[in-house]
Each structure stands twice: as structure tokens, then as C-alpha cells.
Image (cartoon, rainbow over all chains, first blue to last red; front, side, top):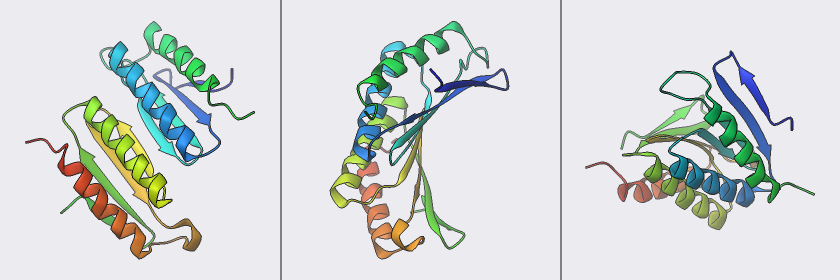
Length: 84
Length: 84
């Protein structure tokens, strides 16, 4: 899984690819629903064929286990959208 | 309406404020649906309480009337979410 990298020992950044705008939009919405469930809210940058995610734990201004758990869950959501 | 500014005579940039993540997410989805209807797709940067939009017409690599029409439609969508 090469989606994610740790940036400045502070946050996770990942970029997901999609076939088109629609898939990127639906992925964004699904991840947003997950963020509300988990009460852990990444930044989501949606554009045609791509969603870039930035995520960290604001309370500690850094990375916590929950960030990596969320990242893995996003990967699983993305599996349903990945281009063949 | 002070949401929008023209940047480098090339694109529109606007930032909308929201009460929370949920409203920003729902706004993003509504604007995404509009983008699909109009087949004119902005970049949407969603985070807690905020959506930043960048938009231009890729075919002419600059601004077209349709960008300003879309901006006005986003303003109307945002009216339903605006904090009191």
C-alpha cells in the first residue's frame, strides 16, 4: 500500500486515484460519513479523478494510532472504487 | 457577497464557512452533484467547518461566464447552511 506517507512526523498524507469526478465525490462522502462515526475528521481535497487526504490528531497535534486505523479503513473503502 | 475572488486573472477561489464538519460535507456533496449536472467540476477542499473552492474552465485555461454562474449557484446552496 503506497497511498500514505508520514509528513514531518506530524501528519499522514495520502492520494487516492479514481476513474472520474463521480467516484471521487462518492468516496469523499463515504469517508466523511466514517469521519463523523469515528469523530475523527481528515481534510479532504476532491478534484476530478483524485482525493488527497491530510489527517492528524488535533488534540496531540500529531499522529495517534487512530490515524493509522482511519487510513486503513479508507484504503478498504477505496478498494470499491479503484480503477481496474 | 465576499466569498469569491479572481486569482491571477485565471481562476475563482472562494471559501465557505459552516457550523461543523457535517454541514461542510453535505455542501460538498450538493456542489458535487451540481458539478456533474453542469459538467463543470471545481476543486473542493473540505475540512471541519470550511469548504474552499477553486474553479476555472479547463478548455480555455481561464475564466468563462459559466464559472461565475456556478459560483452564484454555490452561493445559493450555501444559503441553506450558513451559520445564523
